[in-house]
Length: 145
Image (cartoon, rainbow, N blue to C red; front, side, top):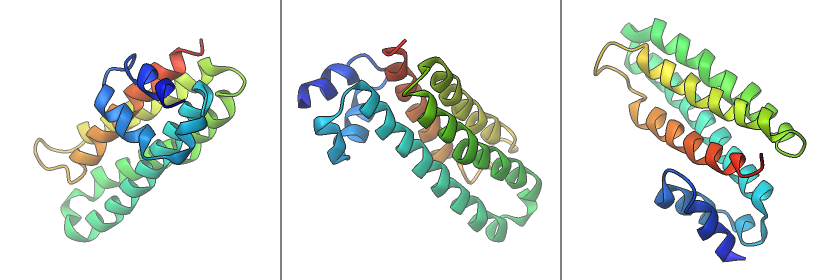
């Protein structure tokens, strides 16, 4: 079944990232496409939660960016609490709604990053990673449409 991971990742915009994400989860060895999507949705949730943690640290280290951090906190809570929830439910029923939720997660991360003055975001690496994971996840969800 390892072949499904390889073949699936070849159809995404970032083959290396896709392989890394899926091969790091033991569930991928026996997963179908829906299962691979669920693994990636879990990765989005974990990264969103990690980013919220980094936002909380940044409140202390970069108090001058409170407004921007508040906005990001709200956007990442939307990713973790709404987009992930919607995607997890929809992937098993109506994958189009899962795709919409994944797209929204990527947009939320991008808008967060764009809210900082140029070069001042303490979240750039995490935000870029979120956008890339969402792009890979969306490509796999689209295989179900």
